[in-house]
Image 1 (cartoon, rainbow, N blue to C red):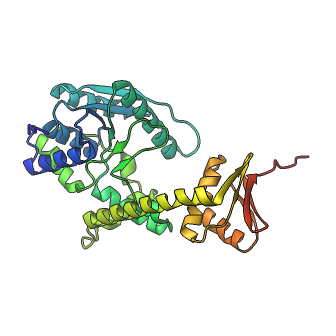
Image 2 (cartoon, rainbow, N blue to C red; image 1 turned 180 degrees about the vertical axis):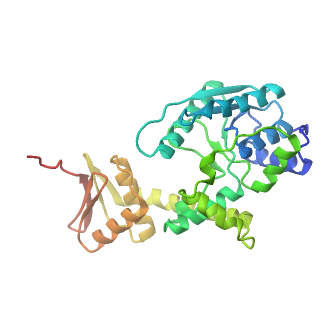
Image 3 (cartoon, rainbow, N blue to C red; image 1 turned 45 degrees about the vertical axis):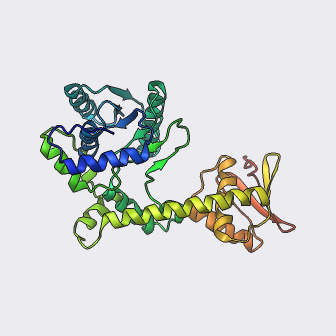
Length: 321
């Protein structure tokens, strides 16, 4: 890909971004950048403008959750207009439940629809090495398995999207992205929730800032290795589903797989396929109960043991009155 450094972006960072873009989008198709107006995503916008000019469009999402949201989107629009970059503002509505989770789902749904309409090959987000380190520590602290410890994937197909999501900044540090913003001298938005100690990620971020002996880039590499291991386990799980699982009307029968790690993945697939959203720790507890000849339920799915098989059925409706 040709590069055309602008905005005073350090050339070595432009080159690294171009290499990441080549790796994640080898055909050089047009991609979409998800830009919030924050420093990381605005740095991604500037790097892309310097490294792959004319090969991308931008979208910014207005969740309407904060009074500043419209102004933040306006920052993105202005930065794009100044550089001749196509930019769309996507408005979504979020209500009820876990607002952060709902906002994330609504954001990706809107970005996926936009990318499909524009014929874009992928959606790029601004997750970087420090984000990856924070994610890995959060999930270690929650006892996550291999899939969770793989962290943020560099290239992933997300459910409900017709295009992949790519993360070209996963080998960049937050401080490097700050130098991009400083060199360009552009205005960026700052989300106050990024400083709120009530969030696990913020507490971990502050702890990492005081632990200069921890290398987020090394942690990002470890997460990448775990992602490779997770892909290998998924291949084995596909074989186990074929060899051990039988669909039975609205349920399923499972010959217990010999390997616990694979059995956990198969059980998770069964419950997800029956409309549940199981947590890994709940699946592990259910597996252990089934191995003891007991039963249990997760997310509306009842599991029992019968004649050496593990049987999964929709949980009967509870009696009322």
